Image 1 (tube, helix red, strand yellow):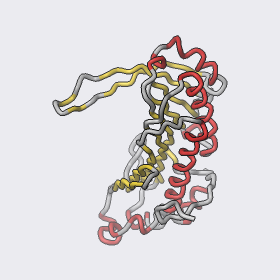
Image 2: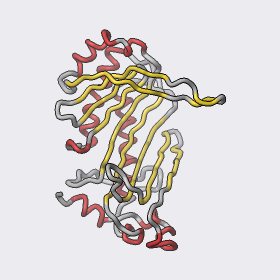
Image 3: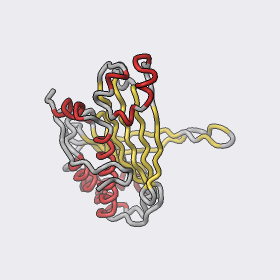
Image 4: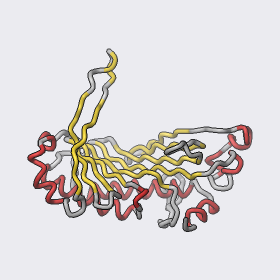
Length: 258
C-alpha cells in the first residue's frame, strides 16, 4: 500500500526523542459573528473548560496587500484556550480554529491531537454551527538538530532527497533549502520544505523537515466524522513522508532517550 506519492505507508511509532518542533491543525469556516462577542462564549467555554481551563483574549493583526498596495491593517479579536499544563492551546476567531501543541511540554502523539480537536470541534459545531469547512490543514515542523556538513547529513537523510547537492558541492554547503508544492488529485495540497537551516532560539543548526497538508475546496460536510477523517488522511500521508525522508540511523537517534 502507498500514499499515492510512490511512498509506502509507514507503521506509526512513538519516538523517545523526536525532532518535532511545532505541530498544529486548523479549520477555517465562513465567518460566525457571534464568536466575536465575548458574552456568547460562556456556553462554549463551559463545554471545553474541563480540558482547556485557561482563557485569555488576544488580538490578531492582518495586513492585506491589494493591487493598489497595502491596505489599512485589520485588528480581529481572538480567544485562546489553554490546557492546565500549557501543553496544548487553541485559538478561536470568527472564521477559524487552530489547535497547537507546545512540544516543550510533552507532545505525545497524533492520537492526543485527534482527541483534543474532536472535543473542540464538537463544541464549536454545537454552539456556533459553522455552515462549511472552507479550508482544513495539518502541519508538522521537524528540525533534526546538529552542526553537520552536507555529506554527513547523508547518514541520516534519504539520499534521494539530498540529491546532487551533496555529491557536487559537498562540504562547501553551509545552508540550503527547497520547497515543493505537490498537488494531490482530489485530495488537497502537500507543501514540503526541507534543507540545512538554523531554527529556534539562537538559530540552532540542523536539518528542517516541514510538512503542511491542506485542502481549500469548500466542503459542506462539517460533521465530526468527516472533519476527523480528513485529519486522519492528512496525518497518514505526512507521517509516511516523514519516515521516507529519514534513514534507519536517524530513527535510532530518535528512539534513544535523551
